[in-house]
Image 1 (cartoon, helix red, strand yellow):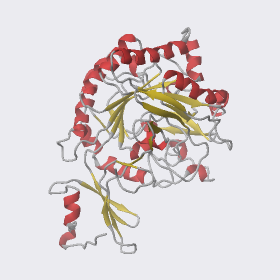
Image 2: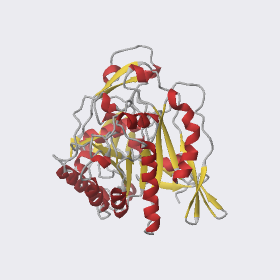
Image 3: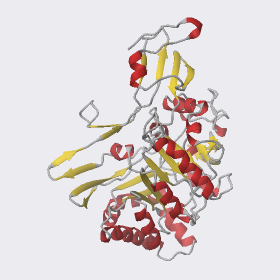
Image 4: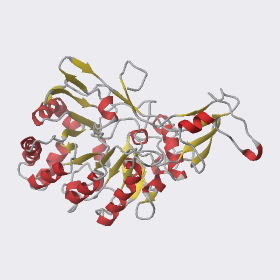
Amino acid sequence: MSEIRMEERGRLTLPADYVARHGLGAGTRLVFEPIEDGLALRFARPDARRAYIEVTARCNLDCAMCVRQVWCDAPDEMSWETFQAVIEGLRAFADPSSPSGQSLRRITFGGFGEPLAHPRFPDMLTLAAGLEVGMTLTSNGLLLDETMAERLLDAHLDTVVISLDTVHIQAYQQAHLANGVDRVLDNLRRLQEMARVQGRVPPRVGLEFVVMRSNLEWVEQLPDLAQQLGASFVILSNLLPHTPELAAEALYDREEPLPLSGGWALKVGDWLLWGMVRAPRTKWGDWRRCRFIEERALVIGWDGGVSPCYALMHSYPYYIYGRLKNVSRYVLGNVREQPLADVWSSEEYVRFRAKVREMRFPSCVDCGMACTFAEDNEDCWGNVPSCADCLWAQDIVGLWDFAGRTLVLCHIWVFHRVKTQMWEYHSLEPVITLRSPKEPTSLDAHDGENHLRHPNSHSPL
């Protein structure tokens, strides 16, 4: 803890050890923000760790539960020029020689469309591979034919997450796709076999499943299916209902736990992986956190618009505990108009991340006032947009792949011969906080680095 004093003309001098430790110098940008008990200086630097890219808002399926059924946006696909601007913008986060060092760890191709439906997706993947970071694909798997599989392997895609649930099966039938499930499963098996024959490391495979009242009995069968497919994880999410009919299918207010079975063993070379199911919470509680903010993630829509999360990347209605809520898209900038690093380090974006990180929002679900603010995704504290009743922040909805923090939060165990270790992933956000004299005076700044820690240790490994 270090005490500093105000100098003439409102100047503050930070302790020399802080300046040296965090690489501060003349010209370093800090965003000033008044807080309840003092002032905060927040770093404004290009340190995003993860990018979610929606290369298209179009899909080859028409699932009944999808937000695309009700959203207010016109779906389209990302132009090649916009994608080039995205990748060029991400270089600022992937450059080890930059003042902040290389922060970008992973790109996820997803959003609310089917990435493989974009005619230039293989070229996009090749261009993105030049950033030399982890890459995840979320897909329904129908278009993962042999040619596409070859391109994925060439680009060193390391994680494939397949959406597979009863709603997708219904969509196969509506699209008159004979044996749709078998087709998806065969595509996955062929991808892994091609990697084995070519002597390549196969992409890690995971399954996504949206749990509803009508498909609850499927949950117990998922570990067996995952083991047969060589999938190392299964991600369950509650349904985010967009219509009154689907609201009746929601499971997230039940007392009974989901019917989960144990994990499964997977042999990968000389290693034995223990696969697990990542289950959502089923009850609203006072514990809230945003994984997008904790992961230092940004979301880029098909038109180049930058949003802080999936929940705010489109405009659409949904129902939460029977109450209608209308979400408006929240865009902090566009890669076609300004560098991505400038969007990320803008004052508005820095302040928004700080607000969400500290969850400076009321809890609308716990409030009995039944006001109209929440209907338009606002709140009585003046926040627009508001995260006051965000189901993602409750871990009730949301599909998270296991590449990074969620891998460890789901307690994936790795066994090698007789040695067993479990690792936890921790993220520290950079912030300098100046407290008022009423509280213990402190000036602290986290280094903003991720650390791997053993659960019984308090020291980074």
